[in-house]
Length: 368
View 1 (tube, rainbow, N blue to C red):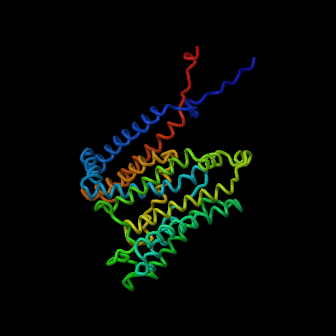
View 2: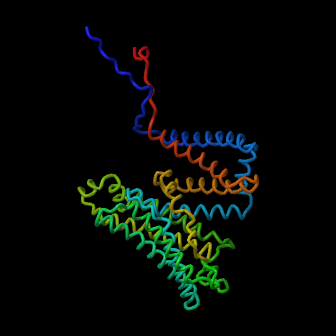
């Protein structure tokens, strides 16, 4: 009798979870952060010989060590959150908008043009109104360009929006030279320093409070829009399946154009807040990489605007703490980025265990 050849089963295999209680998912995330802190502590002791507890205390002081640091943290949080909110409708629609950086810069450039060209010609209230409209339109139009080609010719939106970033950077670079002040400086400098024309007003003596309140309002509006509006429903359906959306009568091309216009408009508002409310100038680094960091914020939050507050806070806190570590302990920026990278690796990895589970092979005795 011929021997039957037995197939050896793998020791374990990965299967997709049907569902997981929300409490369990948050326990996994918290556990991943704690594990990340332990690993970071070990790395800190091995590489720098420093006490990891003192390093973590320094990180906390870097974010909350003074009133000025707290306000700066909240400002950075609000700006990162604003760009994340802008990208979220497009991502939920499965339109990979990687052009947030450029859309923010174009919105900021439109604001800058209004401040320079109209600063001494119209009343300040009217100037700010024109700045708002110009920044929203500029961001929306910049986002509509790749959306149009996607809807009309099925182009690759990832590459298209990515390339639009470089075009926006070069436009800003050109106008920084064109409007340079003083001549030969190669940068614009503080716009309307003496008159403060076009500067967004301060509230209760705090320069950043208006920005924070505006972004908070956008967060609530975006949550309601995505969760309860007809447009939000259409975005979700198109994201699940364009064929299903067409079958039930949704105009997919219209949804793509409308959603990208919204995405670009909110990025334009971010540019307005950065130029008119924070920096009062513009450069190629005004967006400061937020267009790319916002991608991580949106994905970690599962496209939920409320949860994005927490993910934005985490990333901004890590950045502020990492800078403080570099300054206090005399370490270079690379070490602080290593700490940040380890923590983010564990957080992103936790999402795998929330969506999937590892099942090990049962022995023959267990089967019996």
